[in-house]
Length: 138
Length: 79
Image (tube, each protein chain N blue to C red):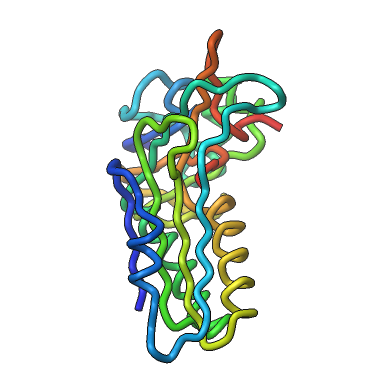
């Protein structure tokens, strides 16, 4: 089962965990990406996420499909936020269930690494004295 | 060639518009890219500049057609 969501409402790691649980799966690994309060020592006030939504959903599906094949995942859930997020808010949840635990850890790491490289979502860090699009410049 | 150019993230800030009609000489993604770099030098400061058509990444050699929607994908930073 694959479940992909891109939305501006708060995410629930518990909900994602419940979604991937399966009688045939002995392991669930959940990655929760949260908003950090600083970047290189500079205080972050909030983050603003925007997405090219139809393509972002498509790319997240591709990641989930790859995980099913490559890591033999039973279920994959990828939920990502858009909009304005405060410190400690959840930006992304990736939950994977597999028959045995090792594959679930590997699949989860693969998913977040690939998401950061290929899914058309952008975040802007807002500081006290300015703002910056993350990772835009070398 | 005239296309519909859509921009997100820092690309939208550089172009100052989310969507616009864009006229350029040539017909490939590479042509569009060199035209953009010439008219908006700020694009050359970016780590990477990709393009999507029909919700898929496309190579530099991809040929566009009149009025096609092309989305500029600056370096992504989800997660």
